Figure 1 (tube, one colour):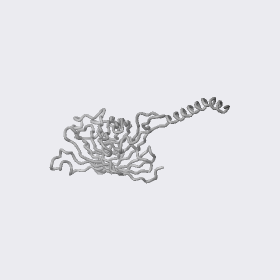
Figure 2: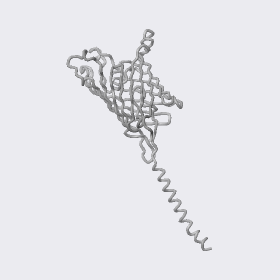
Figure 3: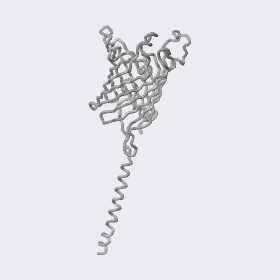
Figure 4: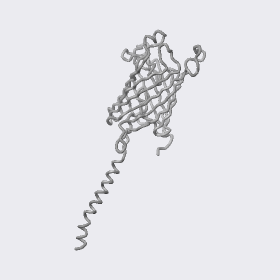
Length: 300
């Protein structure tokens, strides 16, 4: 009888202890951080970059191809007779840091960049509404040839630099949006018509329509572009804001992107500041990006 009475006396204490333990477990559970992944499927949106970096130890081979303009007509087989190509390698030093090198046939440019993911979209203990990746790159133009250099032209004049912040949010499992403020510096320009420093704001997005297919778009708005009449007066081509649409198709280790865009160039400098096609005037280039990833180190 005494044991039963003692049990009834201690029962509330056991109940309180259990509630305290459950409360602590709940607190521990809420302290977990859930990070958003696969905001975009690949490292390229259309012509430009996404926030995605390569995993540590992974090497990505990227083959980018643009045909001539569709308005070239039957004589140019609607652009299929022309080809502009970039071959590149992207390597993940860490999960958040990538390095790349590439070669472009269109402008005979060697380019390279570093790409670092600063913040990751997350919820839980750490609530971050978007992801941010910083990109810094340089491009060296091999054209013109040494014998064709204008008077006073120096090797350093072949260089151009790019700085970008890629800010993205995965709105839903099917929709992702990205903002791309961009700064470009070119060492050599025709100062009568163009500035060395140029700023643009890029906008882009991805809409997943099936498990392996997504629609993408990308647009770069130049804040202070050169005047096209001035460019024409010095014998240069008119320039337009870069616009592109794409279809992403994932097939195992490959990502195939079919592209329609008004630029044939494949580096940030030329895409953003030197696009000479008017998309709505019919200067549309069909193209594609193909990537293949090789894991050189085992994932932890």
